Image 1: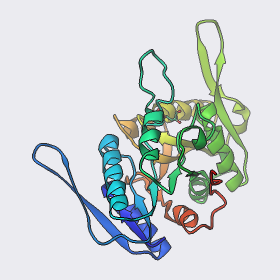
Image 2: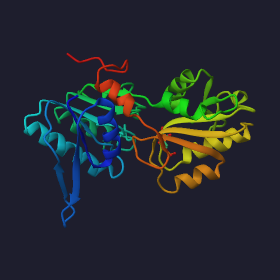
Image 3: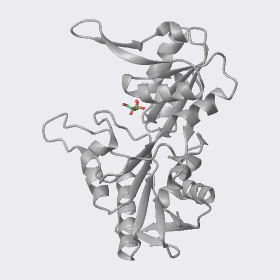
Image 4: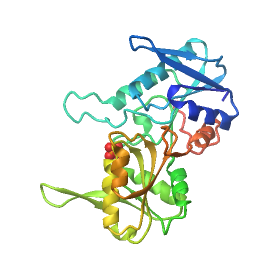
Length: 303
Ligand code: R5P
């Protein structure tokens, strides 16, 4: 990789990535015109194979526009090989037309990025529930990396007592499994059980596994914190000793932190895909391994 261009949501992670790659760092300056339009300026001369880093949080729509405009500018200036590094890929949760007329944002955002002429798109723990792989959404080759092993090692490395990993819903099983493998322990997930025609109960698949043990809840996103808070309460009621949370993208909106700690969570660990005071785990090395071509998580190239 010949240089790293860090867009405005990812100056810190971009600088870590540039350092890990030993590549020059170019910063994108973002300001606003008086009417609210974006003013963007790339400082420096990008050349060769360029990585553009932009997390789509905060202000996901504006962040996406900034990314597309920066990539478009590089392509117009003759940069042939542009890799977009989107540590947090927003808009993936509206992945179906649940009600008639709803726009399937995941498809529309994928289509916009496909139109940008990228060589590769690198992301972390993309929210894929109704699509089994990024290839069902994107024509661009995508490397979808996971921070679950790094997060689990960070949480468990703090000296937990007989740690066990829990996914707060069935969709989180993929991350729970990877986390458990990384720290060589067991995992379980919460699942929905229909208890009557009218009601559904949410409970751990294997409640006995958590009794008397420290639990690490592993998930991709905390938005409002409702999912994690509900899981934490239930685990403590089931006899868990302490509950920790390890999440890749800590968006933490609408009082999420208060909700999580009120539920009895002992500590929260997150990555720097989104920059928060809880971003204790950096994904820079993970990203650098892929960009340097040394990662087993690289996607197969399409013909
Ligand atoms: C859901 O499928 C996701 O994996 C997260 O569990 C969810 O988006 C978290 O949202 P919230 O924090 O608002 O419960």
